[in-house]
Length: 109
Length: 117
Image 1 (tube, each protein chain N blue to C red):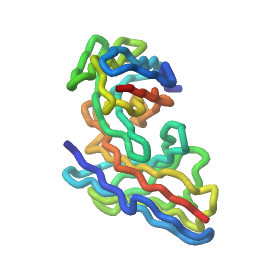
Image 2: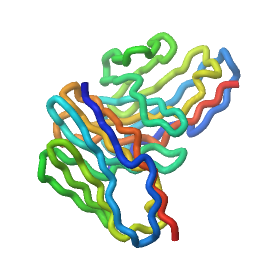
Image 3: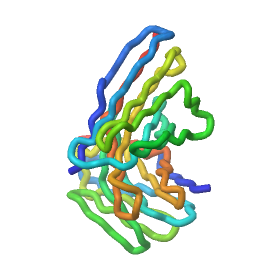
């Protein structure tokens, strides 16, 4: 069974304080690991897709990396507007997305 | 980027009535659409997967007669909650994908908040 575990559950940062969110996973036949951002009361917003170990993608202050067992979402010099819940999801051999429970990120000014 | 819309964004209804939620892919054709349910402070739970022109596949524990899904075209899927009860109150989110091959991202709609009184 595909499994996704995200840590920490919640993270508070000061503006400008860089950190990383972790997503560890087990899957049979990885067909993509996805990162989404979800604001309260809204649907998830797509950030990145990663497919193979060693792959990295960047967008503004965010950088996602992938190994065979985990993915990291690095946030460099975060701003208050980066506050949201970050969801990790993987697509396995059954083509369905399995979501982690998310990391609630709060960035204080 | 790819846009998925949902309508309505929120709905309040009386117990026993039926509610229809629409999901549209605005700038791409979606061969596959998904319906999720999300409870407060929890992650997304897949309810069903639908492919255009065929019957939806429901996840274990989801009542197909209660949650009717129709994927009539490559840009539209509907979820009808029949004879809604207060326990059906939740945040329903649809998702659409051009396909399921590697490289195909799943895009999400903004969600529909349902409150059954």
